[in-house]
Image (cartoon, rainbow, N blue to C red; front, side, top):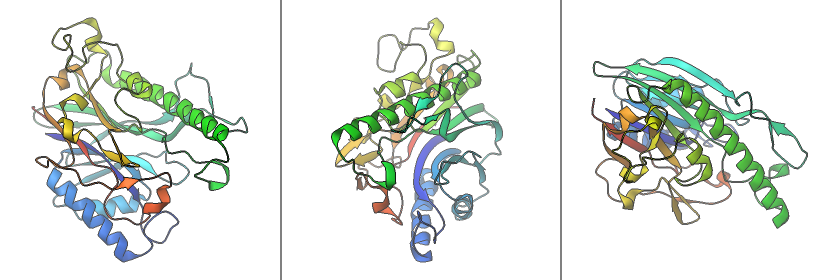
Length: 317
């Protein structure tokens, strides 16, 4: 089984303010996405930046075979949301954007306005095959790319930049905490025997504090002496598969010329010990071909394909 995650980058039908300007550009984008998914051949693919549900249905219609489309009902202000493409009929376990009960709302801007829910929903599904039952949550956490009042992508001064960087970090940390609460529900204290994964665009790298929140009890990371030593944390721990990705492929986006791994797959104890391979891009491809993105996401409006590479793991049933 191949399990993957991919940010599809502004997947809208043409004619709106965010998607391709015309049908030709739209069809080119869909063809580029479909070619990658076809070659990747996942059993379950978590997707992000679905701006138009009909656009994801269009994409699924370009794929061979019968694909199931499942989407969160909690889009952000631009209409983008997370979802799944699946070869197996999924059962929805959760679709939520709320922060945990004890986590207070966090400041969002200079006006003092606060938010008490994630900008985009977290969607969890369960799929069953002859060999296994798998529970997976997909997410898209708050971006590090900052926007400012009035639709600006450049700050008036460094003080404004610092404040809005902090607001984004507050929100991403709160969203990671909410996602970890969902992971706890999926694991149910049985990570040694349950196949559970959390995946998506975390908008930060492996060692970032927000990413680390998702791991649960510390210890036993891949590549450490404790990895093969069972302990009480195994029941609730998640393992980021990033160390299993070949070093030269360990990135999923290029930001201002810098490679970064911001798309992740985290798996339970039972699943990490059945993971046989992990990668970015397409299996067997040594060099990723990605554009370098800047601070203004509108610069790539209507571009073919995606500015992210898919991240995947291969699982032995």
